[in-house]
Length: 385
Ligand code: AOS
Ligand code: ZN
Ligand code: ZN
Image (cartoon, rainbow, N blue to C red):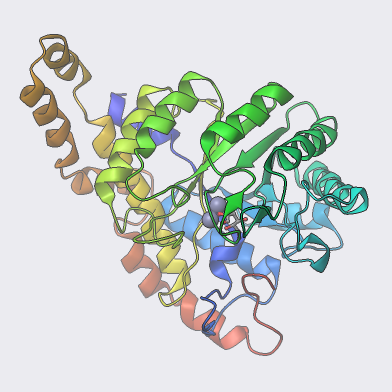
């Protein structure tokens, strides 16, 4: 098999359960007909994306949004639909107790509550067969002087260590960073350096999650990818794209070239090798666009930029770099970016019994009409619901 086919064959993209629920801005959450009312319905939608693209065999859960009484039964339900349950995301940002922090809180009781929530997530993972516990913290402060930056770091380190003790064999703690929001002045895990410092102190089973929307504008994200891969600490991605802030838009929609550059570094660092330990996930919300096609488009965008990145002629590039030929090196790089891989990917799909055009196949399938008719009554599930 050639290089492009091998790398494309290794590509697996995890879908977030919350992408199928209603989401919105602080101004309005628009309801959409057919939106799942239960976690099972979210999984059924995710399985549809996988059936049509062959790219998304796992679904990430968010606890407590996706809380159920029997996770073993949920696992069987997912597997019967052809997908597996993936990363479990904790949630310490929707409880009054966490107003001034969770794992960093001054009050030991609140910290204990946040730690216990993560231990409960680990129990969920034991039943779902998930290997990754993803932690994103809303902890931070809004005003200079509001909190002791150093003390908060010390408490964070201690709390993370208490959770890490319970990470079992074959499990990982994945720590996500974000430079702002909801805190406006200081966030306790603002950047990859801070996330790295904490996971490095914990041990081998702690790694970093890079959410592409969590950097200041202009940040060279592919540099961070290269560095974390070099340090063997890049555990996962939360893919999405942004124009201004943490917009959670369809990955590759705002800046396909950035996605291409990221995938070049992923491939360069072995992140697409079999068993690389780098989980590619989406962390997106579809506020105004259709949700299932939104997810189909997203995984196809990742596949397309991966195929372009895989077509980069490394030998020619290296020769140009070694010769100090700046323009030739940049030319080879841009040639790969401008390569139209769509016919090749359409063929890749038909060879595997997948629809040549998954977006069109979804539109033809009648699935949307069916869920709109079936999912009447009950409460639609949404971000935070
Ligand atoms: C928040 O900004 C982060 O991206 C998290 O990954 C969060 O848990 C996720 O967006 C689900 O809300
Ligand atoms: Zn994220
Ligand atoms: Zn985010």
